[in-house]
Length: 327
Image 1 (cartoon, rainbow, N blue to C red):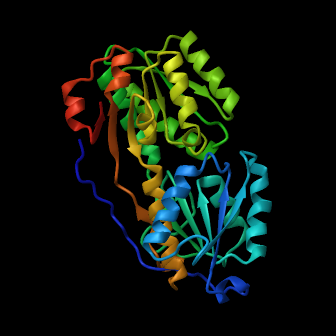
Image 2: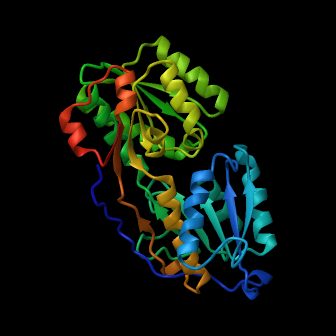
């Protein structure tokens, strides 16, 4: 089931400050991609980014070149990787998530930076305003921090008798983790459930976290959208199945591969928007004048096959609100 969704695109064009590198003089501009993850973790993001670029006439390897820098979840590597991109003479830096964005921002005030973040970038101090960012940064805001509370409401509607619900958090994503945990705890108090927070900042810690949740006998689990978790879709879905924990995720890609339910965004869609922004930069716009895209394409996706495997009956009202039901 699908309903039409809307995306508020507050957009114009981009290129901040004169660049002295060769990137601006070639017919094949160079784009830097600065990630705290790996090629595997960022596959969906790159699918969307390339799609957005292609829709604007930029095909990787033909009319544009991408220079990838991976921190492999070692965040202290990001500053040096960002400096390397600036030295390479990139025309723009794409920064998925807050840590790469902060590293890029600290490295250059002239090279345009296109970010994708899940919390208000004004609140984070990345831009002066959404309509007029005012510096060399602009990008996409997914407002993921507020989705944790909405996801919790979906969990409670699915399992109204659950007295405790687990919440998986990435301690390495400190700023955003603190904000979304605060939102979830406030929502939990309002509906009268106990939140049991477990932390996982690495692949091995995810296995430990699920074993911990099973031992504590939580009624369900909420997994928010996070750059680490979003890169471990199949692992997290397999762990939820192994321990038979009803789990609601913050990204639609999870139920597409067997997760129970998601309330949130599509990574591919978010980074398609980032790709469109990058194209505006390459065509001569200024990030200071290019409004941040506020993505409002939030989807509720339910996998009925997984619900059956967990012996769960999806409430009719929840099914009626679903944007997509996988049978």
